[in-house]
Image 1 (cartoon, one colour):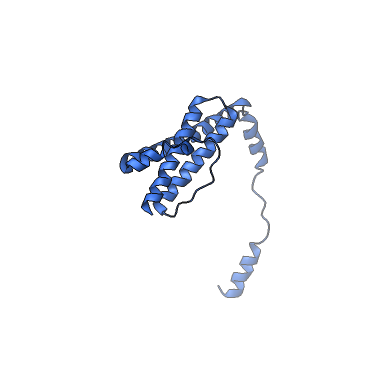
Image 2: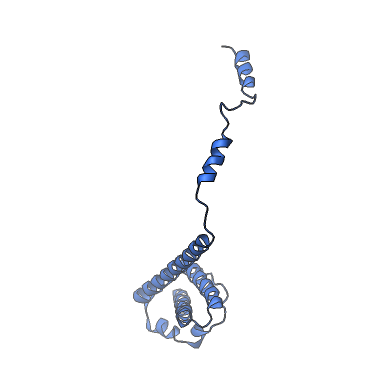
Amino acid sequence: MNEFEWRRQMRALRQPVAPRQDLWARIDAALDTAAPIAGPAPRRRHRVLLAAGLAAALLLAAGLGWQLHRGLATPSATQATHTPAAHAPGPVAPWKPDDPRLAGAAIVLDAAQMELRQALRQAPASPALQRLLSHTQQQQASLRQLEHQAG
């Protein structure tokens, strides 16, 4: 086979080819027999996934704070968690530490605070959410104190 024959065969491949059988009839039949999706189920699934995501973020932040507190607790870091600024309910500006070891923890704590504030907008009287937000702010203050001590 030379190059001209090969090119002729390649041009022949550009022509449209009709399928051997009509596929739309089987597709329509399959869609008709499929069970319809119920209205409330996807909404309920969305709420469950949202709650699971929030719980995972809070668990991660709590575990991180526990590790930091357990491994690096000093008297000055312990005193910093009990300052009135740590319990302030107002939003805190996003904080990006220079130390790469603390940067990941800062991102997680900022995300946890944002999710807690969103949850508090939906349930402002929830004492559990308020305690979690206060605890997250205490962890962030401890992390800032650690950065300050590291220099």
